[in-house]
Amino acid sequence: MNITGIIIAVAVVGGIGLFIGLFLGIAAIKFKVEVDEKEEAIAGVLPGNNCGGCGYAGCANLAAAIAKGEAPVNACPVGGDPVGAKVAEIMGVDAGESRKMVAFVKCNGTCEMTTSQYEYSGVRDCKLVGFVPDGGPKSCNYGCLGYGNCVKVCPFDAIHIENGIAVVDKEKCKACGKCIAECPKHLIELIPYDAKHVVQCSSADKGPVTMKACQTGCIGCGLCVKACPVGAVTVENFHAHIDQDKCTGCGACKEKCPKKIIV
Image (cartoon, rainbow, N blue to C red; front, side, top):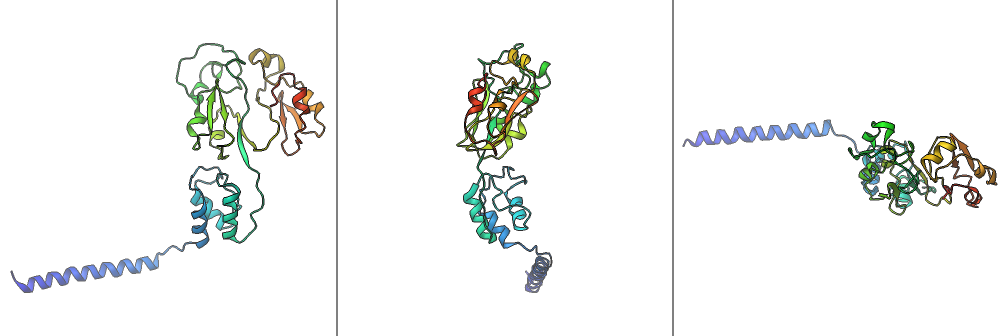
């Protein structure tokens, strides 16, 4: 083999490698993306669940928003106050106090309390059942269908179907909001973890119609409104609602409710 040819080949390959290395080095400097150190630090303390409960697509997006001052330091519902305190330290601000929230299913229409209009044997999917007659077999058109769409999307195993309705384990719930977005009946809402009383019904039917469909449904009688000494209870669309910011937990509404739907 010609030694000159070998030397030339090595020189050419080496020259090409040197050129590529220089090109990549210059390109890295020219197109370098400046990384916010605070953003990286915040992303490092966030839980990484990417649940979307904060209103952003994922933890990285939330970290970027906090670093830019577009989101509060305690915006992560999964991390709660401990993570909020760490993020606040990174940002050099006061974390403030946040109220722990949990998901709550506004329906007590268990198998014993409600009736069925017909026998359903189709796909067990809450959204698809909405297209069958009367929005499902349950007599109450506002009640939980019990097919578990909310269960499937919960990343924390905090919600299960019990006796025909969805029930939230408040100790496991992180208030990410996925079950709220998934429920086609809009039966789930966030309430304070320490809420004393809640109305476990969402029916917007008049009292006589509700009583035919569910033994325990709210009939909108207004006795709870009259009993509340602080004006925390209102009746809209024929069912009661409790303002948790006003409620003192006295229990007067619960005692007066004839259907025992305030729990």
